[in-house]
Image 1 (spheres, rainbow, N blue to C red):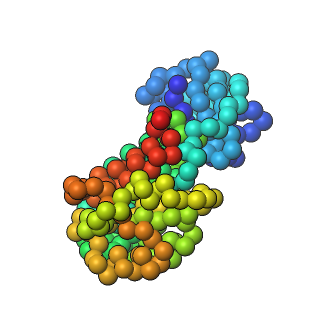
Image 2 (cartoon, rainbow, N blue to C red; image 1 turned 180 degrees about the horizontal axis):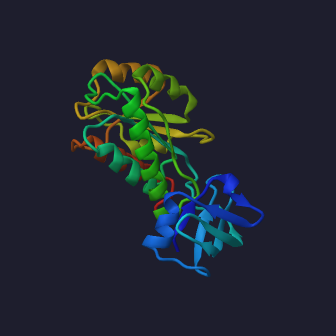
Image 3 (spheres, rainbow, N blue to C red; image 1 turned 60 degrees about the horizontal axis):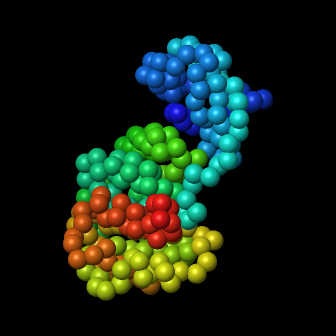
Length: 248
């Protein structure tokens, strides 16, 4: 059953008013009609099974038949801090990261980052990434859509480290200290875990030193050098496995 995210204010008196691109998807793509069932979520505190009571090319109205438990989110919040990669790699990272359970994405610029956005381009790509996250969250039947922040500087990213339960910086030159043994040493998880992944050219040694000084832990993801878009997914998958979020 297809899931759709709606604004909290669209959920009123047991009915949900759906607008925008979702209307086209419901009516034209899925070819749903009055009486058909779907799932709706306000992305905050409510998710329900609903029945279509009105459907037109401009709007869809559904009646919530049953409110369901919001139990699809991982028990641990994981933030993916990703140095801006080239081309459309960030789209892949957002899509697959959302499917795997990332709570948020923080794009940032480091010393070897090639990609740079002006204000106009920043707004455009942020809108695009947010749309991809919403669609991926719907496909994965998540209860919430991951937040995506505006691009941060390296200094701004470092300031986020003390706000986490742990921050892992993926570094290809790190030897011995892997993700698994580091995770097993964690105590309370009342704050998010952050995974930091560098650009195609990797981090400088100075950046690693700065991150460690700020409280981050430098880790290896194995003997093989991973592409930047692969590293984020590998680290996130490893974390989700260790916390029993991948069925084991």
